[in-house]
Image 1 (cartoon, rainbow, N blue to C red):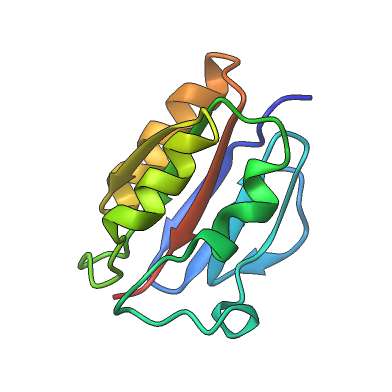
Image 2: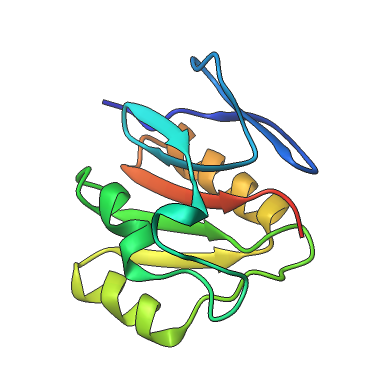
Length: 122
C-alpha cells in the first residue's frame, strides 16, 4: 500500500487524497489516515508530541515519519520522542507544517513507506 498524498493544507484544514473527511490535525500512513485528536493522549503544545501520539502510525510498517509542528511551529517535539522513533528503526523529520507536508508528499510520491502527524494551526 502506498502513502496517500495530502492534497490541500490551509490554516485549520487538511485534506488527504482519497479521504472524504477534512482534518484539522491528522495522522497519515500507507493506506490510510484519520484525525489526530490530541485529547486521546493529553497532548498540548508544550511539552508537545508524545510517543503515544505516534504509536499508531509507527505500527503501520513505515520507514520514515514526518512531523508537522504547526504553521508557526508552536507544537514542540521533545528529544525523548525523537529517540523513541529512532529506536523503532524509523527515520524522523520535524518541520514547520507547510514544509512537512511538502516533504511527506515528495516521499509518498517516490513510493517511500512514509507516515506523518501534522498540526495545521499555530
